Image 1 (cartoon, rainbow, N blue to C red):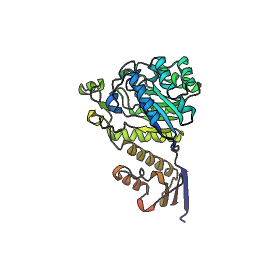
Image 2: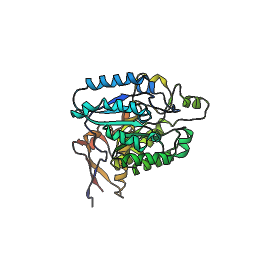
Image 3: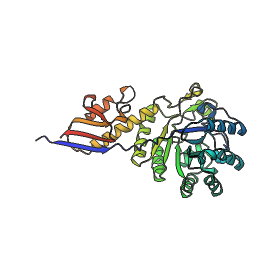
Image 4: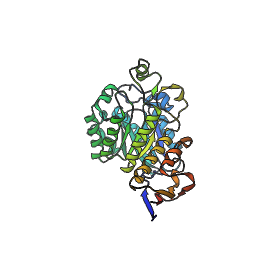
Length: 345
């Protein structure tokens, strides 16, 4: 006798934080070396400036911003700056924190430029979150990529940030020299074990005028394919979501100055959407596999916020979803965050 079963499970992605983030780019500022993959000028659309000019830009940015906002210092190594300049940049934010307009401050830095004295200074000057450019926790990947620190140094930095009461952000860069999908999946597991608040994922691409470009032309480096990158990013996204960790960036933004500088690698303007679509597919497969018998889906209620993701970029998910029994006529979008499927089994 045919029975109707209901499959009900939450969509695990943590909710988006509504407050807008205003970026202040300090291209190359404080960086002890230039990373083999880095071309900040073109990646951010922001040319390197003298620190005095960057401070003036920050002051103008703050005075021109209306309403409540959060501020992030990106593009360089903030804690690699002289202490006097760290103080000057953060002191410029004080009036806006005091009046409540500036509600959150984050910095981006390397894991090997932190010590307790610097952390205490940042705490006293109102920093809420520290994003660490870890890139990978794998020793060979760090060595081949000339990052200059060990996995243990990266782990210690993450622990120190949390011990001092900061929110932790982790930036990962899958596909570096010496990296592999197996190592990437271990990086994801390690990052999850550290319980960051947010994660950024930047699949490695080859930019012009970088050491990585030279390695590519000499056949010393082969970037990941777009297909493999989408599959691995989708796997990682789902793992982070299920751990309650927000992934706030996937892939480099499409800066006009950057696009002509891309030599090779898995860059695509819809990479984030493609990875999200794959993560949704993996989620649906996972839950439908628990049924353990043949079934027919009568109706699937899907959260409205997935309407742009579920079918995939240029409908690329349609076939895979149809193999699961999910087709457009049976899908209904709704405002709730749960996925509910009615099945005949």
